[in-house]
Image (cartoon, helix red, strand yellow):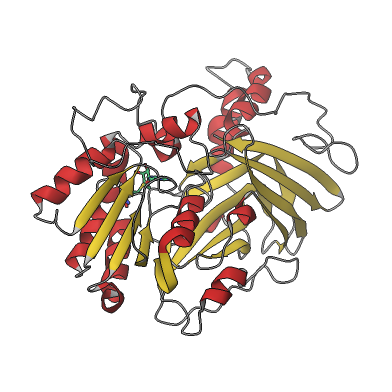
Length: 427
Ligand SMILES: C[S@@+](CC[C@H](N)C(=O)[O-])C[C@H]1O[C@@H](n2cnc3c(N)ncnc32)[C@H](O)[C@@H]1O
């Protein structure tokens, strides 16, 4: 947490409140991730409740960490456990924008999948593996460390695909696949793109098994941010306390602000709340990104407000693109390459130019809604901005040291002579 200088700790410089915004003790083995954010995925006995004694694979044991450089922590067990709940899979599969875009991506790349070997990183119920088998894949390794793999195996069997789709119940970091693969498919994106830290497992799979120049779906991902004005949200949670059945309860407002805005909020906002064009926080090329790059991502931003309005914070959203690797991709360029864009003060608004026919799944406020919605980092108090006012600063997203599935958000803001830092944790 930054202190001194031009910034105060998590609050407006002129507020002088002293609330502890450090990371708190994390709850034990309960729900997590997308399931948690939706209040689904109740606690279960780790590894057992859903297995019913079925052996998923003769060779693979779930969460066998031997041979992996990445230890499987209790937090990881809790994370996989949350994916054993049916609710989160139902929600993801019913997200038509998500699921139909993946199916479309598989069909568009059928020529690169037909008669080829595929790994599905985090297969869940097996839906993407089955799409790949339907597209003519020779073999699909469907890997999942969650007990949902038991159901995936049953689903594969019921669809007569057991000879093509091999379900491996274990972590991608630990399971053994004795051949190189042509294609990696994965739905790894968390809220704010990087929450859940699942992309690291896709990179591990890529570096373990993908042939040079192989296909990764999705191929690219981009995280955006933009300032927003959302007075309804503020009046709903905060102004409400000014007059409650005729009683002045404004003494509740400080607590209400802390409770409502301390942590990032996952919600759907309308495009009309956005005050400027978005900027790129991080662009990811899945062929070349390295795991270490994901430990901490920092981007500077500089916006010019397009209108006069109370500003309530920043919205974050992402898109992913499904395109085939450039023809000149080689083992060397994969090993040595770097992301094709690195956000800079001048360059954030430029995105890698997309091939016009690239398929994109967008979670922007103006795209068809998805279960990811948008993630909002609210200020504790609104700030009035004028038209053309410059809003600048930086944002750093880093994996929590306590639990790498959680994300620390460090936001620095300066505008019209006012500066502050907002620290929050997405847990
Ligand atoms: C977002 S879900 C996607 C499920 C499915 N592919 C779909 O599209 O419906 C991610 C899945 O990846 C699994 N997963 C995450 N990290 C993993 C890892 N390192 N090894 C194996 N499975 C993993 C989770 O257990 C979860 O079932």
